[in-house]
Image 1: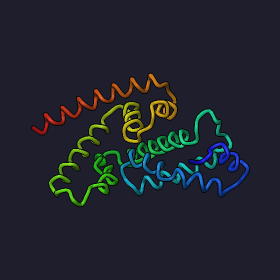
Image 2 (image 1 turned 90 degrees about the horizontal axis):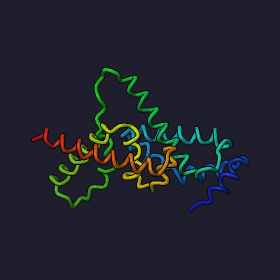
Image 3 (image 1 turned 90 degrees about the vertical axis):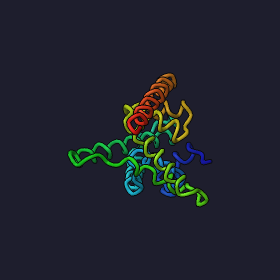
Image 4 (image 1 turned 60 degrees about the horizontal axis):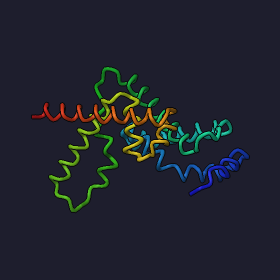
Length: 191
């Protein structure tokens, strides 16, 4: 665990090794957040670079009202959403991006001992789940991803989303209800 206050002080005093340490400590987390939004490792890495560049440019303006990690989560989400908006503008009319690309990380976690049919079924379930998550309203999707996929505590989700814990709870209840409805409808369409 790093001491964020000390690290921040060193960075604002021009210590580039402290900034490098902060980047190394948070790099995987930032990429994982970006990947959950954009679904492509290369794009997630590019966005992560933008996140750290933005952080470096504005770190002197950082107010310690929240933790650096919360600030990085917020930057990561915002940069990812900017990327998605920009991609949609460029791809307008060219069809929808396949949400299954989001499972790149999960594919790496499949055990070699699993049968091929198990792997296919698991991939299909993930595909259906990510398609349903993609259909959620933006704030519900964000709360769900941060809470369930990133496993942040509700206070951290609230800080990241600039809202209250009760609002996060409400978003999660509605997201889960909507997700259940979408998955039931999807299952009915298949059968």
